[in-house]
Length: 602
Image (cartoon, rainbow, N blue to C red; front, side):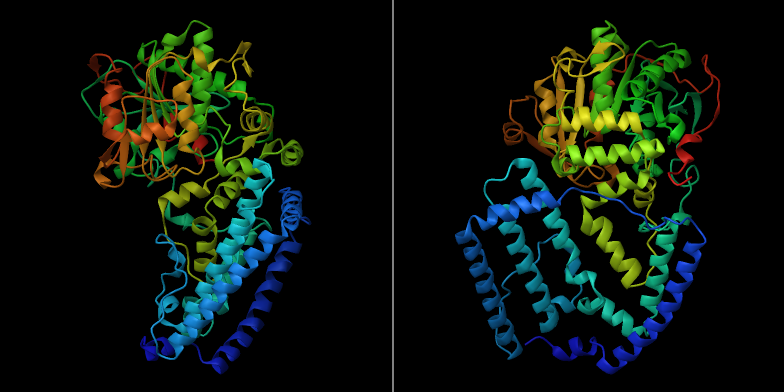
């Protein structure tokens, strides 16, 4: 039998807990009253939240289909009943000192139940297994409903997972042993601190909950993140162009342009010295330029996807030629930045200017949006109309809206873990540069974002020859003959790798597809010194991604050296290192510039 004395010592005394909760209720009432008084002095609609996710119809249809299959519902209920009977029997056997194997166990990577009480104490072990059985039953039942179209089925599965994550016992005071211990040991101080944290986040979000993920005061752009030395040498309404200082005496003749997504900020590629892809590229002997996108306000409401191409990569290439005297460049596009680069390549090919770009690197980039993963859940006509109405009121989509969407894709890691840490345990969030960047969201101009969501996600027009027209040119990705290095990540929940792979079958030029372990960020930002993960390479690109992986070779560690070797072949001969301001462009300000420092709430 498990040592119960140790486990029991960790459990709270009921009377002491009752007194503590009474004191907490009294103090929390005063805190809430004070908060509401502050809010009443602010805007009258601080709590006016509109978030029509259009999920009701999907669940109504699922329920109707389920009711039409009563035998399956009965089978599911019987299966759950049998599982609970087994759980009750094993729990009773364990409480009487007998051997008892778990009926169900958390997944190996499920960190919610790491506290020893979930295993050592019969009560919490029962709660844990009861939750896991219910979660499995609920997800299996809705996932096996027949007759739903793919979009409806995906939406039901996604929001069922959100519900299952939300009701986990770890998210509640009375069913989380770690929180209960902290409450007794601190005499409820953790809950009072948690309430203060909650009200602070509500106030910071102007009535809308904006969960703190890290210590915002621990970081400053240009001081301890985005610190690779360089200068801003060009800017327009949409971009600042940064040229980084060389660290080698000689550099490749062709400069390197990096275009990050404007949904986030570029310094994910320059968080700190040890994991900066920008610094790595500079050290390899490239003259590195980076596009830093503006954080737009209502004045830029009518900026279109076409404007982003003209004032983004095309303007950057022209500016780089003035700075270096070099008419062509190698270009890297990350995520949405890569989607824009793909459209730009096709545009240049039609304009007989394909030689402006010598090679292209795509990092986790979608071009065929047929299977966009969980993000597709947010794309339907009703949601788009609601979103457009919201954007048209302000001229942009708030940065927090995009951040919330991405956080929902990994709710346990990016929502509920912070609910527990900040509000139940009453702790301050830990300083973490990646989460600082994740919280530094950006706004989206109404015209551009509507076009992007409709033409890419809803209609999948980019992959169709002539499906979209930019600056008078029908875009046809088949015309792309530029050599390509394409990096996708195996666990990417934003740009699923099997969907990104479609580009290998579309373009007519040579393409080197590489698959890295981990996800959309960690798989990309993985320096060789970390000795983490692995990657797969294959000299051939068969029609199916499954066949590609089956014949690929796995290599340990980072993909960066593989890319460095590949892109060196397109760098040209070595020339004396170029410093910002040496060419026809003069220095405007120090890197990382001023655009990146504008926060969405500013």
